[in-house]
Figure 1 (cartoon, rainbow over the protein chains, first blue to last red):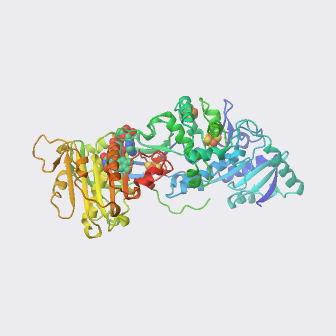
Figure 2: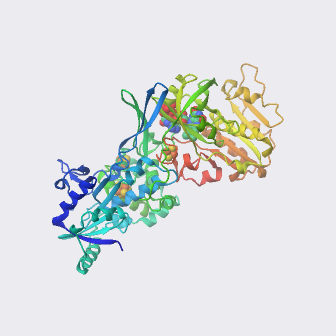
Figure 3: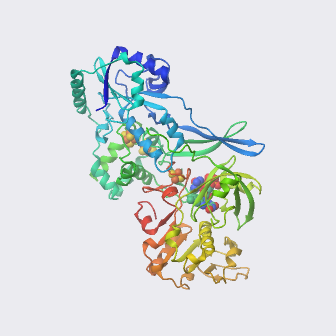
Length: 348
Length: 282
Ligand SMILES: Cc1cc2nc3c(=O)[nH]c(=O)nc-3n(C[C@H](O)[C@H](O)[C@H](O)COP(=O)(O)OP(=O)(O)OC[C@H]3O[C@@H](n4cnc5c(N)ncnc54)[C@H](O)[C@@H]3O)c2cc1C
Ligand code: SF4
Ligand code: SF4
Ligand code: FES
């Protein structure tokens, strides 16, 4: 069992203050439009964790794989050209109030960027960032992390995990990094009583029944996709509904494909940048010869779901590529989203 | 979060200098390149079939097959066709210009497996670029391989990459070099004239002890495979180089994915059997 503590809600701002002293804090923040986004904050009053805030529009992957990131710069010098790596800001960061589904997605990306050849741009930022996860007791209508085994309560992956017990938080310590944050202010954190443990258990149990609308039954779909037994009509139909806008990939916390370009950014030279890309764009696979192996939209929709769900990828990534955050449900204009596609394939 | 194992930036190119540029056929040139840093240059080695990412300053980065062979270290060669942004700027450079270079990437040909076997190399168009590396490698370590046959065809003599070098091999006792063009208006072509498929009828290969290495435009694969099946080649003795749009070269950007493999990491060389098992391949 993880090391556990109690933090009273009246002390939460003090804890945020401690975090602010320790590191740069990134937390859920309400924009003037009423949207929830993750943003660097400077005071506890900016943090919205208390009223069952909805999932951020853009997932926190943006703090590890930014939508646009400079990889290196180069310019002309006396001796010719010189590349200068542009490594990330290495200051310590805390993502405060991250949701369990998003933590699971970051674990997924960790494995990917670490596998075979290490991607230092991602890993450096990751290494310097602590994740303080807040469990969800009031899932949104679009949430289905319960079907993907990536929430609403985690057993590992977080540095600290907070579970709301009405007037207090049940705090679980997942790593030494998390432990350190608590140690700084021992008197804020109280010992856990038997009653606390019991209430925690009750909340964990009762939350499971609160998932309603969005559901995805994966196993049959995974089998069909992996064995190439999906009816062609399914892809035809989905392809007709897709606008190739790429929104589904951008908002998906486990999608990580990127494009690379060299741009003239300043008087002394060029920047090599990487930007989010999407396998739903026609140009994603266009080859120098003009040949395009995924010319049609249906082929690209098929590709996206094959990557997310096929057994071949599950084996490679240790899990399927969906954490049930529901963002694709909110984003896609064509109503192509994980639960819908899983269901269509399952029934086909 | 575990510690980062190597503090190494895989995306960081090294400086390299263009030593020479040999004109090839229309729109194609052979670039001879050397690392600026002598130490890197000395320690650099690779396998035929691997590729590198080249940076042309101000334009960007693109993948190109190594056309030279590691048996001749020091200078590395790329046979490049002008097709767009990066290659346009590359063609504007002159000898002594600096470029960026990183790699080698990809699996390359399984040389250890090929040793002591006969080899049938079939090239079409720019497919000669990686296969020239294999050919040189094999000829430079001749005793480690059995019979070697090259089949390479083009529309006319002005279409043939590495033309003079290959014509020199026509009478070589080391190998069987079969070159053919569809048409020859100049009347000076010393090798065969006719469809490249006809060359298959002139070769004797023992399918059980031969590896076939193929690289060319997609349409070429179709007829070459037919010819190989006629001769009972088993699927795991046919090696093909697959091409996909690539960005990073190191398995991260996702562009080159095909089925559950990444061409830049698991390929570009696949056996026909492996390619068949990929849902999106041929
Ligand atoms: C493993 C591998 C080995 C290659 N070896 C050689 C070689 O030896 N010689 C050679 O001449 N060419 C080779 N190519 C093709 C070469 O990479 C492309 O011609 C080059 O990327 C085009 O870049 P560009 O900026 O000049 O063209 P662009 O202006 O970028 O584009 C022209 C066209 O090429 C497509 N394209 C762009 N970038 C890539 C890319 N990275 N990969 C594939 N298509 C792309 C575009 O969609 C567009 O249709 C190889 C490609 C791969 C993947
Ligand atoms: S599936 Fe939906 S969100 Fe994704 S590219 Fe198509 S229209 Fe856009
Ligand atoms: S596929 Fe949809 S629900 Fe699943 S993780 Fe991606 S955005 Fe979230
Ligand atoms: S080229 Fe980026 S993943 Fe293969």
